[in-house]
Length: 386
Image 1 (cartoon, rainbow, N blue to C red):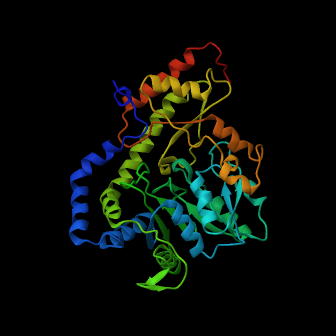
Image 2: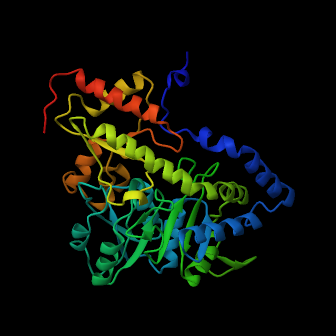
Image 3: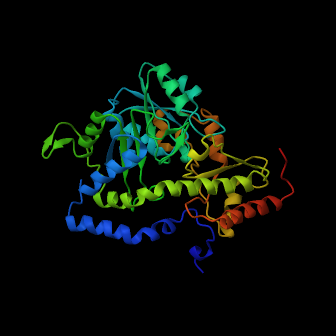
């Protein structure tokens, strides 16, 4: 028996999502093949318009990845060498790499202990004359408070550039992800709430000049064929990927609703368990739960890795997002941060565990995961109430 046969609850089930759309997706791919417009084709233009409209903005520009959406988007916003961009330390490394690729310097700040989102109070403490923007990450599917973010940016007169790679159609305070800042980056990595059949990303904005700038930068800096006005790069969302995403886009809202419902099921079971705490949902129905993350506290009977091993043994796949905070990554050594600089993020990274989450996960599967966590707790009499 192989490992896949042992899995009762996969961490992500892409087949469950993709198979019902297989015929329609294949037809969309065939149309691109027949047209032969594989690069910057009609299906890309259609998807750019559709996704921007779904997010509530006017312009969308498809690029090769979410990282490029950050890098090229920041450049289009006039941010580059000598500029500082405030970034949460609790994020995937791509956020920081996007800032560096734009030529700017990422200035890291700690996260809020309850929501795991950027701590705007801490962010205010690192502003200098070089600070040009803040790059809030809408993490795990939950937005940073739009009101607080807009008030903060207005107070300090800084650009807001959103990282919504994990927050497709998320909302908070009746405001949608991608509508707060000067521009926003999205990723269409296959496991995202809206995922392609490979890599892909998009920059959305209300500013036509920014959109046009990114279109130029993504295409070797060419405003028209063989006329290069600046140094750009090859970063274009493939037409076939755009066609696939266009088929999936109408299903995104229902899929997000299923994720939110699944999270409520988890909440119902897990709030009873000792030694486990939940990441706070401050967004209600607007949280789109790209990930469902819990914290294994010090008073839990077993360490996180022991719990992961025990869950794996009974067929439950899990993840950790993310095990090493960005400031302790070897690649970030030149930024000058040390262990202890960001205690909330360091604590979070040592405790978090991502449980299976995807549209279509059943109540029985969620109950099984939670039952196994309960059994693990009961295996030891060392659990302390808190």
